[in-house]
Length: 162
Image 1 (cartoon, helix red, strand yellow):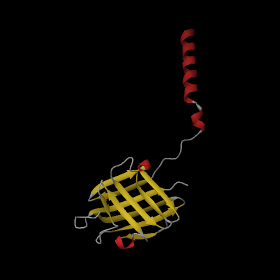
Image 2 (cartoon, rainbow, N blue to C red):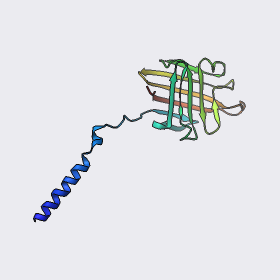
Image 3 (cartoon, helix red, strand yellow):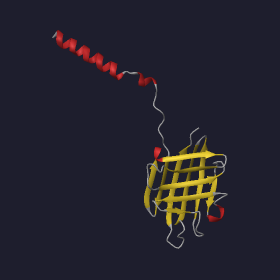
């Protein structure tokens, strides 16, 4: 009986020392809750977390998929500082407003064909986090006579690094 008690005390002490280590003193970083969701020609599409890259500077901001991870995705490159407003993208204002693209791996963009256009509406800017909606009809690069790829019901939430 004494052997069983001793064994139990040793096991209990070992389990207690393993479960209480210093990693509890350093909380894990917050979850990356970035997302881009939409429908591509009526089919649901989503990328989240570390699949998304983003940056901003004084000339503009960019949101998109991480090429090293994915073979298809949404790219938004817009001019200026992110603020609550509507951005209308088309070939005539690519340098002043920006562009929207879908890659699959062909590129369907609002940047080059006259009948391509899209809209990004930023609905919230809170510190480094922006949220909004988007939709666009993009033509395959340099093949303006082909059918457009249509992106609808787009939503996004992105937190930029400090």
